[in-house]
Length: 319
Length: 241
Image (tube, rainbow over all chains, first blue to last red; front, side, top):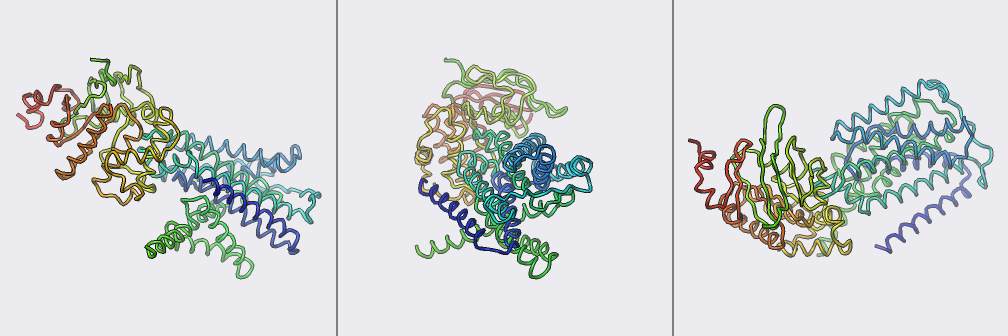
């Protein structure tokens, strides 16, 4: 078990170092914008998978949690002008609490009812944002990016490194959860909730932990978003595409492991960015749809599942 | 006789206007083998759902080792030492047989056993019931009889004082019934009190020291297997007038 932990952190450090190098080498700012979008998607996919993949509860309200993170930043920035890391922590706390509350109210519902209730929650929150004048209401709010970008050449490079760090952090959290005793309990809930309870698994408590971590992580993904786009309105923050991507990416990458959503996020998010610039920005939606349908019908365990099947076949051939 | 490990008094459970159990009382001695029989719809499964916490009884009390457990959620009862197997097997399908056993060891038995070598303990249980060769198989691919064995092994892994076995043998062949009986006997030898719900009378007669008969939510008879066979009320419940 131990060498594996080291391997993960070595990998994380390597990715971080590569990101730093990238900021020094690349001079076209587009790369940072594109990478930011992909990495944000990776965090969203990882977050969704904690409740959706590990625990088996499908959540359609991802955009709601994301927007709570974004609006926390908008409000705190306007009110106090706090530093970004503080606002990220606040966003995590607030959307984590929202996850806890939503979980407490809805996690007694099974399957499709839970999915619908999360969608409804997102719509309720959007209505609140539409009518909250302080953060711009329906017409949205402008955010000025700070002039100070530390030792990076531009603020987008700073944001890129920030979201990269957050993505690594959320991967670490997901990995810890999946390999821990909690992860084992979550898997038992996903497989059979009644049997889990009679095996002593505190099902409601674990589901609430799962929902809170999911919510907090989505809030974290949303918190730097206002500085990235510099203009936030309810339509963009509560965009259904955010919610759809958060579901599609883990499905395509594979929901059973922590690495599945990361692979899914990189592959789908990367493909979307490439198609947006090379073909058309409308096409990228179509691609997610086609990929999702293809994977659900042909490879329901995602890219990770395909890889595992391939490895098992090879093993069998050797024997 | 020492104080019973499980004491059910005046248990009533209603589903809307339908009374599934009407003031039923029973007790289970430490390490005892109790049979719970009755025609279909007599309330056997409702009874064990109330004992295991899947349902909450409307009236009456359930004392486990002298403490009232009414109102406790199912998982807490599992942690206290009440295990159950399900009539229709409910394995954790994404896990191997061994991993299935690790769940109750890591949760239900967590406070009562050492936290070390969970996998070894799971393996030891599989060896006791002669199931070790399947340890690393995915539970989703098991046959019916193996799924029943897994149900019992997983119940065992919760280190229970009381096991409720809900029709663990229904639909199995005669030799398979013997295999399951042997597993239940092994468990009982280790001091686990067993409540067996079963329709296969051969198994009930062989296994149980005492039998409680339910019919339409009422307890109509209680006694040794020999007494139950002779009881005219039981005959009437099963065969009619």
